[in-house]
Image 1 (cartoon, one colour):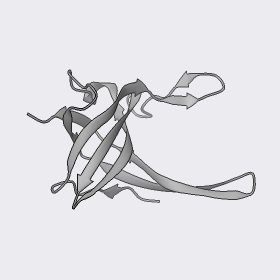
Image 2 (cartoon, rainbow, N blue to C red; image 1 turned 90 degrees about the vertical axis):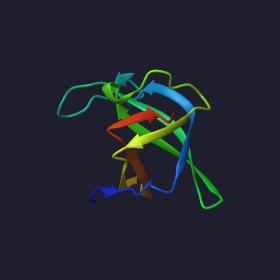
Image 3 (cartoon, helix red, strand yellow; image 1 turned 90 degrees about the horizontal axis):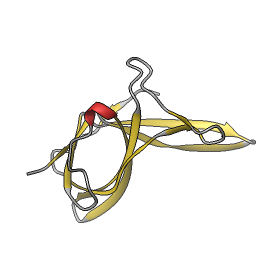
Image 4 (cartoon, rainbow, N blue to C red; image 1 turned 135 degrees about the vertical axis):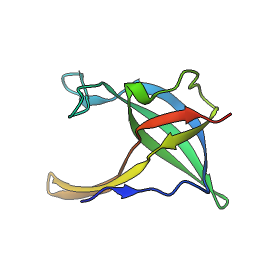
Length: 109
């Protein structure tokens, strides 16, 4: 499936879980890296607030895209946030969802 550019112009975001290295393989503990640059990938959790609703998003960001001062509760803005729909069959059951990626996460001042 193709990535979808997410319109965030009307949204506000708060960081709820600080950056942690993204684990590619939980059994081996292998850390995920960007396929083109080899850079370590991190995940953060944010709450997106829009039109009286709040949704928690888990966003993957390269290490170079993490701003200093990313601590729980600070307002942030994802840069070039995309949504990647996915689906797979695992043990005969269909699983699907949306993965989020951003080039960077900036502090809102």
